[in-house]
Length: 257
Image 1 (tube, one colour):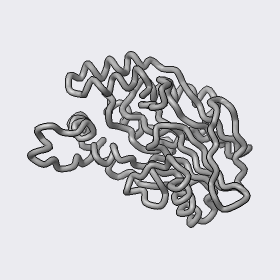
Image 2: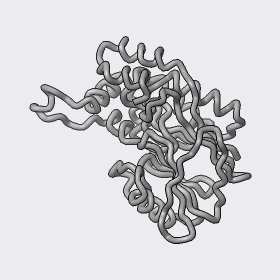
Image 3: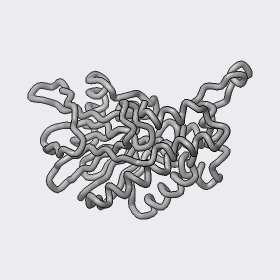
């Protein structure tokens, strides 16, 4: 099976469509969305509706922190209401854009899922509700160790970090970090344990504006990290057109920061 792993879509219609088209052209047979369907971007309804359609077709989805906040925005103190954080502003605006059915869909998403020996989670497997970043060897090892408690699981795929990384357990017990190259297949043999952060579809933050996702071939056990050019200028223009979201959100897409 070729499994396309997409995370951190962040209501970016243009990036989502481009990655889906690219994955299908690469022969993707199934899709997994690893959270943060919404937040920051201008088209949460479109992205959630597409995600709902994919779920109905057998895609696997897990919840991200922005999904949870959009479904049920946190209470804001009187002082904070004078200058709400950008995340809080985005959550409140997104909540208002979504229909009740779409908010319920986000609220009901599980924190983790297991598919063909792979554990899927937005943040970390050891405490998914804490939204920790698996961006270093220590946290990645804690996440991988927790995932190994699930029978048959050898791989963990997550998002949240907005960058593409691969950690693997070497001959010892410690993890090693490997920097993947986009478009180059990496053998991820199931007898060895791996944790990958698949990057962000809708808001890359590594200085490259191209969208990110990953493609896993569970027949050959090959993993390929992908970068996909998309119309990020149109996505930025859509943010500005809302008249409500911060200019910074648009600039991030333009610069991949």
